[in-house]
Image (cartoon, rainbow, N blue to C red):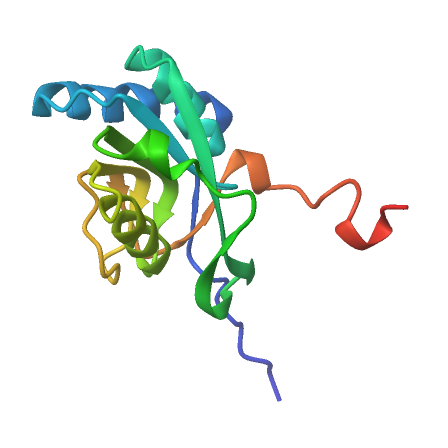
Length: 168
């Protein structure tokens, strides 16, 4: 009996060389919208590299990160995204124009949590992502590509050299 071939899941692969294209595209979208962020906040860990690039492209000196854990493995999430310490300084966020940056709006639940939190401090919040999936509950203000595929990012393409449990 012949075995049926199992199709590999569709993947979208972002390369390091494409990161500049992503940054330029998003920065052009933000600039064309007229939104001028005072602060760029990365959703860590996935949004850190892209947020750093956008700080230069948009000439924004103030950058921070908010730590949210949702994905624990490929296609495996916690029941809900959770905020991790350290937390942002809420007093310095109040009334600011903030651009939130993440690698992907997949389910959109992480982005929704962060937007709600920052708007709760009175901030004018916009969001930028490299990829936007159609099932996302949040439509990001700015995005580079739409896809339904699993995405391999250059910063997470390889397994860790040292795993968390291996630290002494």
